[in-house]
Image (cartoon, rainbow, N blue to C red; front, side, top):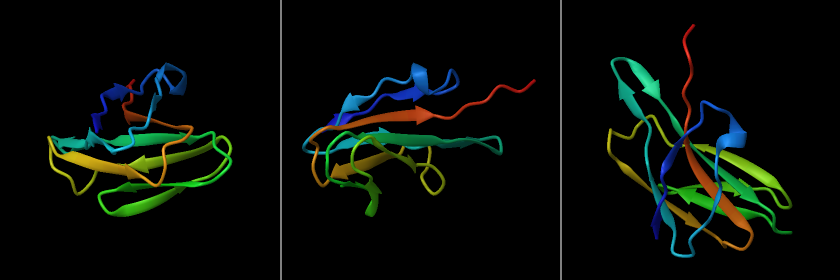
Length: 107
């Protein structure tokens, strides 16, 4: 099991580094709420295999489409600051993941 480092997504998807999913599952820090503002975290999961995969986050399964399918899974909301979210996979062949904090710039 690997602990995913939450990356800053403010520079766009091209700045996010995807890593191989661990056979025993992974975990990531959930999004936080601070001063009435939410700093959401999402999981980006990409599947390059010919069959669909299921990613389970805290008991909820999400289907990642086959052949370059991309799934975006929010992991914020009911979790508290510092909570670690468990992530498991039906299979890890050709499956990559990234945990990304969605941030914006106020102008």
